[in-house]
Image (cartoon, rainbow, N blue to C red):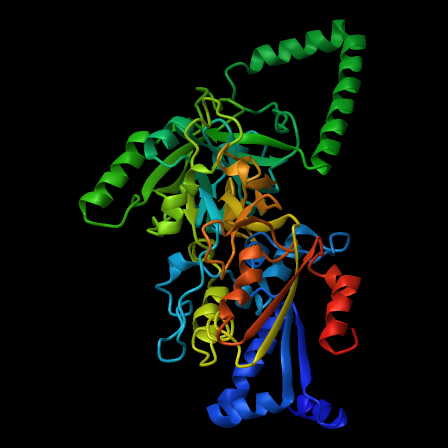
Amino acid sequence: MKTIEGLYSKSNNTPVVLLCHSMGCKVGHYLLNFVLHQLGKTDGEAWIERHIHSYVPVGAPHLGAQKSIRSLVDGDKMGLDAFLKKDEGLMLGRSLGSAPWLFPFESFDGVHSTMIPPQSAVEATLPQSPPIPTVILRDESVIKISLPAQCLQLTSFVHNRKRVPPTKLRLAIQIGNDVIVRTDFVNVTKGGSSLHVNFTDDTWLIACPPTIEQTLILYPYIQLHLEEPGTGSAPKQRRGIFHLDILWAFRCVWCLIKWTFFCPCAVMWKLGHSVVQGAKRGAALLGQIRVIGQSGRVDWQQGVIASISKTNDDGGEGGGSLYHIWAKIQTTDNVRYGFFLKKTTPEEIQIKVKWEPSTLTSTTSTSVCHRSHKNAVKYKTHDNRNKNISYNSCNSNQLLQMEGLTNSMHLLKETYGNDPLGPRTLSAMTAPPVKRVVAIYGINLPTEVSCAYKRNPFVRISMSNERHSLEQLFVLDKEAALSKEGSVSHVIEQGVINETKETPQKIIGDSSADNIERKSGDGTVPYWSLQHCRSWQGKCDVTVHEIDSAEHRAILNDKRFHKILLELLGYG
């Protein structure tokens, strides 16, 4: 306010043009309501009348922009692709406290207190809904696999290699034929005369088809593998002369014959063996692994179904209770020991499994149901494996909750929702307290209006080494395509749905029967959000200038924009 008063006095008491761009329009609109809040309605209106000539929003996201949702869920490098990695872009997108200010308005979350202006504070109808839901989500369930903290004794796995025991191990969990999740390598610990490895809590989420029947067809079993660095078979301990073995005499005779009659061949074999061992050590350094123990395939179908039935019978929430699996891991070298060639005893390890159905709640939005958007997106290919893939409409609040972005939801509800000036309502939807609004924005560029998401195929949500891990539960569904109905008005690329200059738009303020025009936004802000200022006509004088093919940021350097601005200032 002091800056505006200073400009006013320095220009011989000439009112100021409040020129704002992009998110600055949100700030400018908020400022005008802040004046009324500070000075009172009568004095505030007088102050604005004296100091503000007109409010000029340029490329204004009055009702938000879908990109703000994608920046939180999938990350946003802000044009710094050459400098930021994927994880860094994700961290950047989720660290911006201003992002909720740009969340798109959605009528189907109108029950949320931050979305509906208080009737006592604003006399206005709700703005029109977005032409297409801002989030389209693949219908999926999830299997949660948990590894409790436990100690695995290694006696069975090192009986034949006491001089060269493993130094570190990890557990691999195979789900069906296609999915394998792994813990980090854990150092082997010696306790007294035995070796053991201590696994800490770990949890993974595996994306699955929507029903339990489809899930169990895709993942009919679970199998555990114990891995160590290296390739080939594990190094075995050379058998000493006093080793109690029923075949000891035969081994001595064979050794004598081999070195007496086949010395040249034995030497060549030894040289070749040394080369192979060196190659294996090199492979170990390059991150190759070998399996030293594994369980049988555990058919978990009946157990998983029983756990679901038990939960439902008890009146619990949808999804199953924990199904406990005790898998027996057997060494893979199949070597017997002792005079009677006894088998090694398998070691037992516990895994917890839970199947959870989709948590997406159905929407009753008339706009969504009427336009049948759930049929506008389909899967690119429909083979036997993916023939049941379907998509549902969703809203951004639901997606953020499922992604676990509690900080953003807290900002949305507590900071923005409890602000008496309504950063997302009173200072966004309703007309600003000025006499003149001159809105300028670009049109007819491909502009993001929605995204198709799916669950991350498998996500590790807890780390055994307690490192901070920034993992996405949902990712862009790059296999999604538009149906024949959807492709008429929009295009999709890598899961991002754009409106185009051929997209039909309902023009606000045009009461004629043919009030549909084919337009799109400025490459960043969708058209339905840009043109919302037309709804302010009647409460203030609104003039709209649409500049063809003017990009959201490049418009500031556009000569057509400069011409409009100069005319407004009286220099045209």
